[in-house]
Amino acid sequence: MPHDDSLSASDTLGLLGAGPPAGMLVTLAERAAACAPAACGAVTTLSYEEGGEPGPAEAEPPSAVTHPDLAALVDVQWEEGEGPIPTAIRTGEPAVAEDLLGEERWPAYRTAALAAGLRSSTTLPFRRDGMTVTVTLCGFRPGFLDEQTRTAATLVGDLAAQALLRDHQWKQARTEAEQLDNALRSRPVVDQACGILMHILGCDADAAFALLRRRSQRTNTRLLDLAHEVVRTRGRGFDAAFPAAGTR
Image (cartoon, rainbow, N blue to C red; front, side):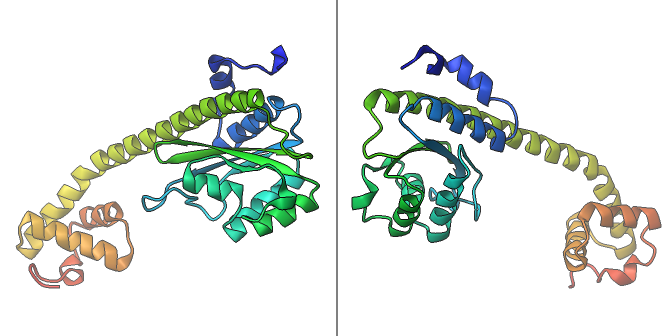
């Protein structure tokens, strides 16, 4: 394999470790194709587990292609629920079609791929902590993927999966931190609103909070917004809006 196509771990993580997942998938597809001179293009996808089972959580998970014609092959697999990508996601094992002329597992994919001039494809899955990245290499001739090329593509895909997982975990941590911050900021207002309700309704703290939450759900109003209104009005008018303590 030419020197320019080889990648170190730091190089790959540096290229894929920043930016939104869609952009990282594009870079991954380009790098994977560069590792396979005999391939005519590459496809990458990103999906998450849903309900404890490996599979796409979205109707159309993020994907990237190195050639526009390959996008149709991705679409038909999501639409039909069959093909090497769904198979690789479901099983966690490579899905290989050495020669699509004789392929019988995925009729819709086979038809679309042959119509695009493809004769073979190999899809490699990389599963990490509820997330699956797939790299699909496509060829104009049967059995184009040799062991050296597959090893290089596996390295790139494995490192990319690590980078995408790191990005996903960072976003989750940031979301949790923001939620915690919002909760901490809203607690004094909610407590104050509960105190007002306790006074005007003659109930305890638990009952006041339950009434506030129930009112929030029934009126489709954020709990914090409702609490702010109770505090702003000092509870005026809320003795009628809220039922007596212990009732609905």
